[in-house]
Length: 325
Length: 195
Image 1 (cartoon, chains in turn green, brown):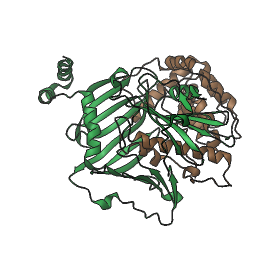
Image 2: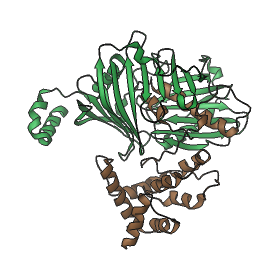
Image 3: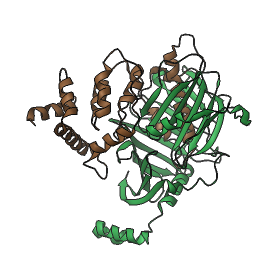
Image 4: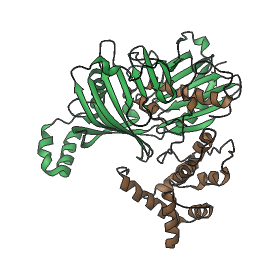
């Protein structure tokens, strides 16, 4: 019924094109998003896209190769500093040529959202409205436009342009409650390929004279609940804890307790770290495009939430953190 | 309202207003007509840049004020050397959408943006409803040693900690949810380091 209405709507707005579109089957938005996820993981592709944040626009190239061990990817900045990110099943390497540095992070490719999540995730559609809102052309390809609108003020919305043929994501916008775009990604060119030369996945710099920094080298997943001291007592409806880790991170030698929450689309990380001295900055809220962070210091601990959700959400989550002891 | 004021608003938006803006800004907060003009000019600008959302409410300003009432007001914890926070913080409470833009204009003259960052974010407490200024900047310390060096100031360490959280979150992000892949790293690549 809904689809029929959509057809009527299409024929009203698109005039001469309506007959052509009526031949296509109009996909279900959620099915289309599933297909998009699969396509971006399982296809080989090489593309150039624009990334817009505030007034800044950057161009990047992404090369993605599917494989039995999971995907391998290389992201290269074509504007500004020639930064690169290379990701495979073992690690993520971020090259910062301007600082002559490489930061290595343990990869979580192929590691499924774990044990904590009731499966499947409690219906995403309870908290977002999915709508197929039209058609467009991006990077020379015909695309469906899907709108994902949050039902409350605790999450952001998305608008996605998905290639009708390959089902790859061609354009995406992160939107706040008023529909204002916070961040935008748009492909200018995207080629789906049978195979990708391994050389294309190698960094353009050797990193020989770079300083290498390793993050999360010895990932410890604490299985014993007794070692997990902290609980987030409030999260927006539909958010479920997907991970609860204790891992050495960053500039501290002490393991950081890390709780990950997701509603299936948005994700919030809450970090609790014991501090030896009181830091001078980063308390309170910060934002970077669609990413908001909020930090507080309590009894020698820093509690920080990071996520692609409104500021209110990270703040409320941080404020709800309680010690189990 | 006089053309003179309109010109000033326009200049403000374009970051071309010379000298002390305090009076213009005060007038902007206190006069509904000027606020409307401000909104209209921004709408025009957004339209020219193709930034318009699918639908626009003419009541944006009112809705922002409304949402600001609900929003806990977090005033900046630290004063900074380079400008006086007071008028700006005053703004945050009464402000309409556009204030954030004013702020980001002012901020662009800032050099000491690391220590200002919390203040900026606090002031732009309307940022859940407006395009956000890039109030988060990665200092050069962005590339962070895995071990603590003696020379690191607490300030640097605090920034490093946050940077690491962001990077770590990205990696979880890229495997979680429905929109996986390398795209979360896009942010990392574009982050401007402070030279």
